[in-house]
Image (tube, rainbow, N blue to C red; front, top):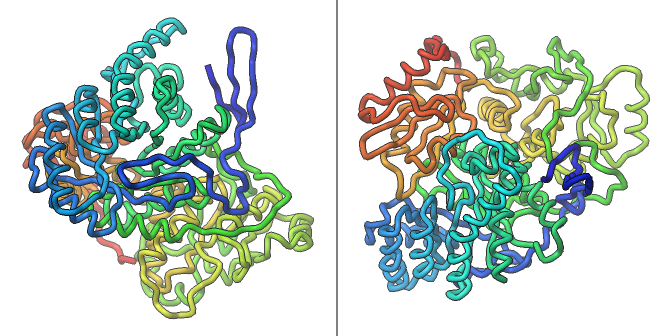
Amino acid sequence: MWALRDGIFYRRKGFNQMAIELRYCEDLFNYSRRESRVVTVGKVKMGGGHPVVVQSMITADTRDTEACVAEVLQLAEAGCEIVRITAQTKRYAQNLEHIRDGVRAAGCEVPLVADIHFKPDAAFEAAKWVEKVRVNPGNYADKKKFEIREYTDEQYEEELGRIREEFAPLVRLCKELKRAIRIGTNHGSLSDRIMNRYGDTPLGMVESALEFARIAREENFHNFVFSMKASNPKVMIEAYRLLVARLAAEGADWNYPLHLGVTEAGDGEDGRIKSAIGIGSLLADGIGDTIRVSLTEDAVHEVPVAQALVAAIPTGGCEAKVRESWNPFEYERRKSDPQERCGIRLGGTELVRVFTSRRKWDALAHKIEQMGDFKPEIVSEDSGVIALDPRDDEALAEVNQTRSSQLVTVLDGVDLPVIAAFRLLAAKLDVRHAVLLKDTLCPPDGVGADFLPTLLRASMNLGSLICDGIGDAILVQGEEAPGQSLRLSYNVLQAAGARIFKTDYVACPSCGRTLFNLQETTQKIREATGHLKGVRIAVMGCIVNGPGEMADADFGYVGGAPGKINLYVGKEAVKFNIPEGEAVGRLKDLIQEHGRWIDAPKAVAQV
């Protein structure tokens, strides 16, 4: 059995123990892309230095050939390079033949992927017609029962033998037909076997995928990719990092490509921010060969966000003769000393604070008292923050020799990527000193920029560092509008799990399995519950994305049948077959029953 502790991987077998120091990235201060083998999906190649491939997924019912063909063509026109289609049963999978024929008849060569949950026979049928099959190791050959039991080594091997019987025939067929496979682990849908040995952890996610990969390799099949999706960016980042390190430890020929995604990211700015934190931070470390941004919106809106994330990958850096001062596989906040700035406490275990400039503070001064939890807290120019180049060892030594704890940031204009610059600062700075993060080191000159690239860059840079455990305060400089930069600051903190100031939603993207209108329903639930600070609500279109994929949500709203909703508390279904028209009201009642409901406060000034 494997165990992870302080970045060291231990394998215990009998009285013997082997320890491996894990590394997921060649150089955390200088960009280099992970080297992976080439995997072919139709005419598209991923890995091996090829450009990052953008994917999405249609929402039409797989039995509706005309609607599916139309959506595939729309996505391809928008620049989507691979399109996924759900195939929940063998009957649905059979229609993939007609969808493929319709797409090809229109002159479109975009590869098609079948999305499989629970049904090996559907996967086997789908492989006949499409270029790639996605399987979820947590439910491909396992009926999840949420059982608590101890597996002996013999019982564990018996389970693996049963999985091999189910999965190996698909591998052989894909090898024969030259198809690709995605071994796609999801945080919330791990098998009972994995849950009881490793828990609902990044390590469990990785081991679940490796079980299936070993079966593929036993069949001498290598045309597959991995994914490690989660709705929590911290969990997702840790899982991918751990996977990369484990693959490297297994050997040089385990260099399979990776598909990146934050599952159930949601909609609007929140969905884009959460996706940018998870996907963007990994891309910035050179990890990822293909991506999908999962938004609770029309799928065509996912494509430009994914393209913008790929375009925003920061390259460059510096050669640094220093090791990182944090454990990249298990989140822990950097232990700075608490201190006070402008009457506000920061550092240590205090809240991650929101800074702003004097100009923006003055622009908002007339309504700051009415902003509630969303107001700016400290003016940067008044804070006494020390700005320096993290390569300037003399300046760093001077700060480290001070008796009192300081607040330090990176100097604007430094020619380093933001993530590399702040990592270098954190590695060289005494841990007692607090760090003020910035989204950009090149503030705009007053000319308004497109907000999407600004939002994605801020989320990628700030979110990545926060998920590394670095940062006691943040300053958004890339957005000129005072209110908008403030909203972005708080939304990044919320999405990174650093500071909860509003309701958190886990909402899956629509697909052919969805049993109600996700976009309309999510909006109704937001309107009814958006004031419940710290409550996490999952909105899931079907049972596949139900109790498992909700992961650590407090309450769940899940499609159980057409027009019928099941309500969950955690992973337990407590209300069944509620008519859709009554379900939002019943959700409010359920939240109240569990002591989490408060009445909405009076409106405060919007930022």
